[in-house]
Image (cartoon, rainbow, N blue to C red; front, side):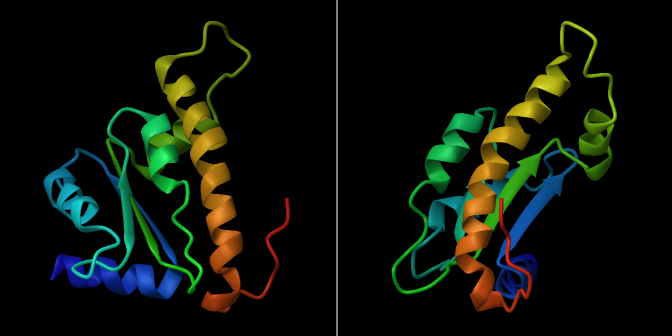
Length: 133
C-alpha cells in the first residue's frame, strides 16, 4: 500500500522528497533504492545516508533519452521544521553549527541537482512556468 502511494505521488509530481523524522521508513526506502530503475520499480530512488556526495553521484545521469523518470528521494532525520529551523538560524555566527553545515550542503549540492532534474521533466508533468536560474 505504501509503495503504491509513493509510486502515485512520484507519477503525479515527478519528484517526491520524503522527509522521515525518525528514519522509521529507512529499511523500506532502502528496498526501493535497491530496485530503483529496474522493472520492479521503474522510478529512480535515492536516499541520504550521511553522505551528500553519494546522493549527488546517485542522481548524476538519471535522465534517460526516452523521457523523464520520476524521482523519490528519502531524507531520514529531516522534517519541514528541522529544515526551516536551519533557514532561520543565525548564519553570521561562527563557527556554523553541524545542522547549518548539513543544511548548506543539502541546499547547495542536492538542490542544484534536483533543479536540473525538474527542468528536464517539467514539460512532461504539465508545469506551466519555466524554471530558470
